[in-house]
Length: 188
Image (cartoon, rainbow, N blue to C red; front, side):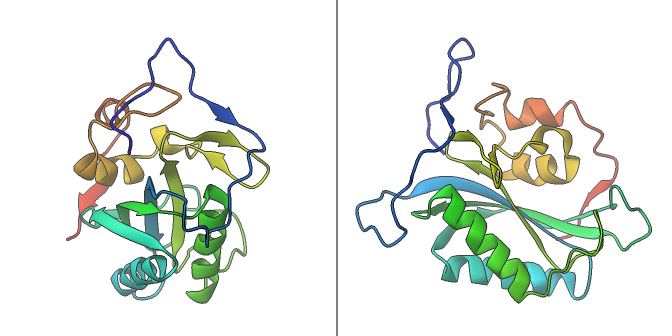
């Protein structure tokens, strides 16, 4: 993440249709990203490890990983609990390329979507891509519900408590103080 945080009085730059160069572009500098992983179906901890390995194979260099947390499901509650983790990483992939790589990994790890909030082998969410703010039909950055989700904010606060949301201007610790964390427990 950039060491500069946007001024609360100056709005963050919003990207609508900016084109990023190909991932094979050797001139593209790596950017810092934060990625959330979740699993509640199958060998959850093993699936998180496989997702980390496959992300690295796609050009995502993991710099730091939070502890793994056990959380209760939201939405459809009649399912196993989740294991969640947040990664700090850097990549030269564009936001859309990173989203596509994440979806490819989800498919490879047998993620299916029979209904909203269904159990899943793996869920990979792009939380932040540097300080980029974008809203397209396929991707919104930062993740639109990051400030509401204790299962994301608890592990994110472990590895980046002072990072600021580029739209809200709040630190991760400040966002965390506004949510109920009672359903989030450290697993490992």
